[in-house]
Image (cartoon, rainbow, N blue to C red; front, side):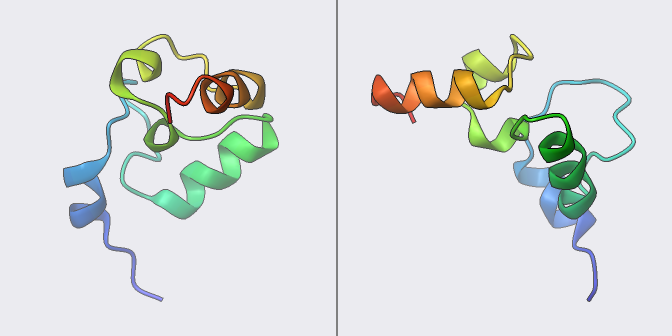
Length: 67
């Protein structure tokens, strides 16, 4: 399977500068899931900037109808 890194970078809202997985969604997802997190693209921009990408934060946003 071909990685669409350039296309992924255009819609990636991750603000972590220097991330080696930026635009490589499969690596990003695997890394975050291993840490019990979701990647930046699952969160609104204002929440993404807090770097709290925990399952718990995502559940909080779901309950609040914010995602």
